[in-house]
Image (cartoon, rainbow, N blue to C red):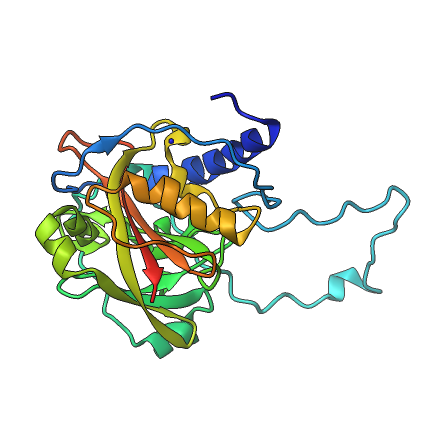
Length: 296
């Protein structure tokens, strides 16, 4: 997942923050079929990482000057109380999730209903012949939807969510989801792509982004050990050019695939990665089952 340049070290640090703050905490039970684990090294990149803030919140507010006087209402005691409804939070510790919990899906709403209820709903994904048929959310904080549903109800099933470091409508994004293997919900059946027969017969899926629905073609699948963060090559979000992006998709990510690759990514393509935890049957671990797909 070499001698590293100062810039690639910054990139590695970014990937480390993402992995340790969210997906690693989301590791759940499941099976990736017969997928072989891959232990890989992170390549040197000339990409300039985008500035990152704290994963637990938005950009820091400007520091007030030392001689600035705070603005105080004429009568502070008469200031009205805020009527805003506090945003729900979850009391569940994401690190306790195993995927063996017997959790039922909450009642499904329509896409329009989810969007009206929660402005964080940015899309919908549907993979035929699986239970993957869910709204997708995105927060500034990768941890928030590990234990919150799209309706903002706490649950160990959480939500399918877009990594906070990229937009779902951009050139490249990663969608994370728990592998709830016992109840077969969320991304549990994503690991079906580790079976060659399923892979061959389910090469496409539908992804709605905003108001538009697209077909995506799967071009690579694999299981990777991200216990060493350098192995998480798919968590790279910044590229110096569109050509560099295409080269990375073809020469780095596609080469990891368990099955032969018959698709070449171009500089104008849009790629989505789907990521969930993978188990070897011995309990919590740090393996990820990853599916890469390109918009048609």
